[in-house]
Image 1 (cartoon, rainbow, N blue to C red):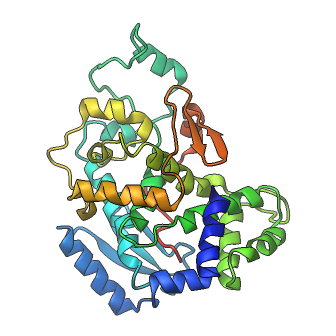
Image 2: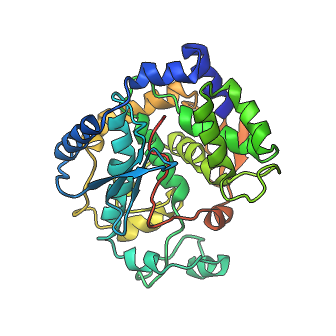
Image 3: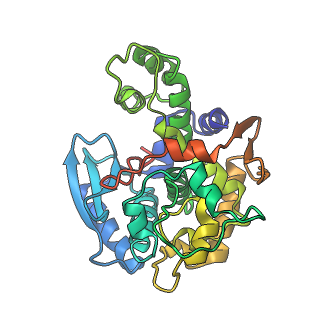
Length: 338
């Protein structure tokens, strides 16, 4: 699926640079960027709730960070583009910041703050004879890590308002991790030339993929970058049945929606502007799924299997818990398509 999205994008635009320029327009100035931030916060009734800082040398074009998760960090030099920055704000503020803020009013927040990984035994003890989770009082049982859901939802919301809704950036990250796992840094740099024509951007992608490795001449990749496409595909596959308002009750994984439904207080949460018209949002989701060729994806619930076109991926909830790590001081590091 990742290769299909990448090839479809290049077939239409010719190169990544042409794609970015056509869909994103000019790179924003600092003043132009701040004007869009202020307009976005006003349009979403979030005035005074988000601060902006500019950080030199940041690998991430944009990220939410800070002790309260309400600081928008813009990497310098600015890489945000005029026509796509509103989508970046939907990603960073409308998704990460609001889900985190809403989480703080829920009964599970303190438990998640101190959470330790729940074992299979813990969960089995909570299941009744019918195999369903028992509606016991909330007593410190933490939710699963939600990184796949968090980043998948954010990536979808980055593109949701765009005419071109191709998931180029998540697909590129997924592909780079797959290739980087069997290639050295230099081999990966050469391989990515077919998708990234700009040498500096290609170098940045390789750095993302190989970050944390002492010897980058050896095969290996930082696999976290796969959660963007992986999470987006699952959400798109299940979009017809998903209660998106419940997803915004906090930092909740798709696998914990049943539990969240038992305890969530939806009366005091803030929803982003793109969810105020739910019918329109669902229409956007259908179009996004269609453009990325996942409109007919099927997810048989019991086997946790997803059909990604010609690609079948087995989803193990236990493996997801072990592999997902959420950094509370840096919610996201991929809030831009360029």
